Length: 251
Figure (cartoon, rainbow, N blue to C red):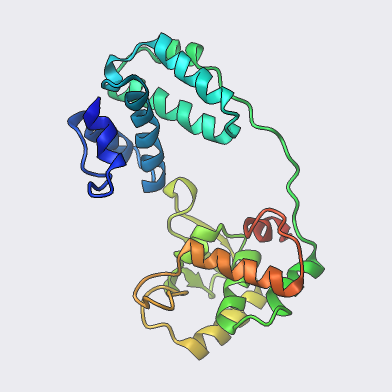
């Protein structure tokens, strides 16, 4: 239990330095193509079991897991947080320890997510955000790519110059949701904007939108969000769910 606990708690010990059991969990997740973000979340969720009961998670009973789940529910955590936690536990006990998955499913009913209506921006507001907020051409083109391409922010950050296939009027998304490759439409307006941007900035790295501080790396998600929030502030518009709402606003 102490190894599972101390491995992630100590700032001096990186998260990937783990016990054999934790390594087995990460190996199983990696083989199935889970993202690094999800792997971190799952490892942390299983670590909480060891931390709560002060022994390795493979020695914890179903009844104890139910106690821990009840404690987390009483903390009024977000349904999405609880779902990630339950998914991690199910994966660990079924795929790593090979315990009966049907019993796990019966033991852990899924917390339901509260339904909410997506609040997208109007076309007038989008025009304000992208074109009338005084952004630099690079930042303006980045937000326009998210909007006109219907991209997730992570997808836009990871775009390479070769992914813009103007001859076919498509954008290649190399690592979309679930690490799947897909294509999305490339409108004429966005082609023109990208050509103007590329002609002025001529990014040297393969990344279409390189980081300002580290030109050999792509712009980070945090950096992209800051661009969006700066534009909102300049336009005096409310935040209606983050940059993702640009993607939902396009039609």
